[in-house]
Length: 135
Image 1: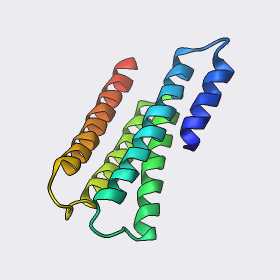
Image 2: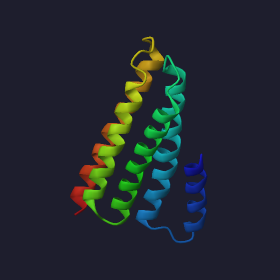
Image 3: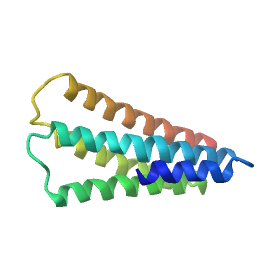
Image 4: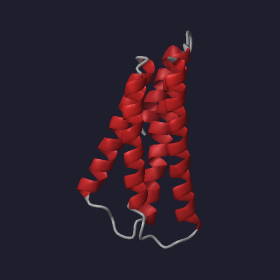
């Protein structure tokens, strides 16, 4: 929720003079850091047959957000290597989140969760390709 509120606040602050990089940042904060992260966590909470330990939850959160920091810093600093490293951390976090639901009963919700994670992974790879092409 902090990312959604922060993205909204940033949008309000830059509305008088938006730049491409800042508009991208707002969208990334709201959609990927905020909404997608919320859905991943909520899905894990609903689907995981047993609640993950606090250490697992914190580890997933840290890895996911280190990935976000790498992507944001790399994109705004025009450093495609940072985008790649951030994306690798993000991909590892996504795989960890999906793995935590491996014993969930099969059904539409589980497949929707896995497809959503796959969509996020493929989107992040597209972002890496765009970062490399921008150079």
